Image 1 (cartoon, helix red, strand yellow):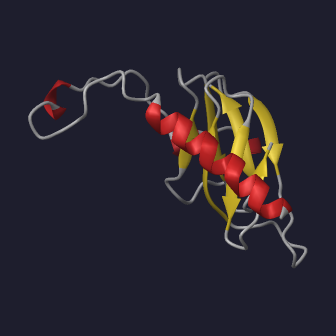
Image 2 (cartoon, rainbow, N blue to C red):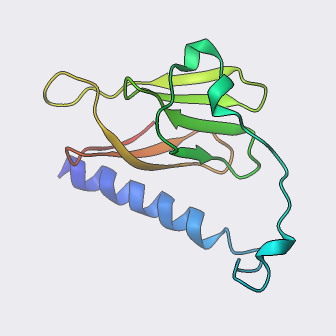
Length: 125
């Protein structure tokens, strides 16, 4: 029951982030050339404390001032746009090892993270 509740919280945050992100026009083949880069994140040169990032998975808050990535050790690292680490989140699975993260969403202000793991666990941190 507890897992189901957290999964519900995760779905609510995920749907809220998807529904409120529709202020800009939908990107399609007719308008994608108009997109302009506003920020470049070099994952090869992140601070050493972040750890090695082997996958392309990342989450941004609404104004891209907070970034959450998953490092090689399955730790979720939240850092700001000045490359300062804000938080390190380690969720231990039933096997005693860090859980394998499969998806998540940062809140609009970047102060909360809903995360889903392969063992079915969901967490709001």
